[in-house]
Picture 1 (cartoon, rainbow, N blue to C red):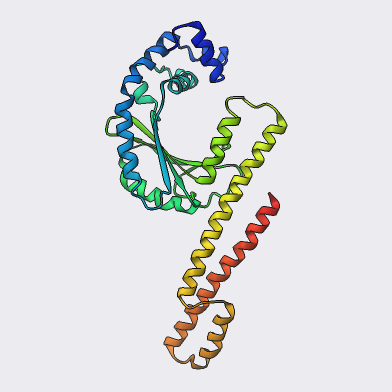
Picture 2 (cartoon, rainbow, N blue to C red):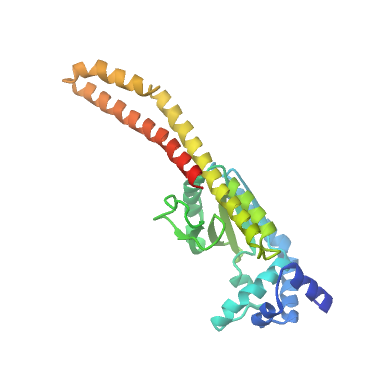
Length: 297
């Protein structure tokens, strides 16, 4: 794959790897070719493995859809070139003998959600199934300025990346790592656009970078709006089922029943109705908050 100078030049051009980056890796093209040739015959076996895990995860009802893949050999070589400097700093180096153990995303699963708040249920499912085979603690990548309350106290939060997703890395039954990413449909769409535009071309144009950042913020707003509308509809339907149509209905109930307030059961009924009204009003107030967020952004 990388045996000729022409192939090597084309590879570096495709993945935007400079001569300096390659020299810093301290790897030879012969070593990289050896790793690629070792990995390629195993890909079908790994594909079957990751498919089994994907089918198990699909059983979680909060998963909207998912995809899975085995890293192709060109992307494996690219990652090894970029990552080897980190291992050199630790006094180690990636090689044919250790890459399968050290590269933890040879297999990958991407889980897509409709709403951000669905994550907590997927998280609980994944932890129940795979907590004992986690290679590292799960973490969430968020954009600076994002609301992190969904993840706070549950997993580590990182805000040093321009994208949003939650990462789990587990050790499969064949000894290899599987990286599981969880994100919403909005986040997935943005990630694909960002990856297509930003990384291959190493954008330096300030105007284009600003437009990409605007698209990133719009992704966050879209998720916030989708989550809010879903919450609003769910709470509204719940209140209708409980007999709470609007504030006026609640207060008419209170006025009618307050005359009998010496009855403890009636007092409890009034208290319950008030709580239902407060919950309904909180959801309505969220609409105003979303409007403020949209104006700010």
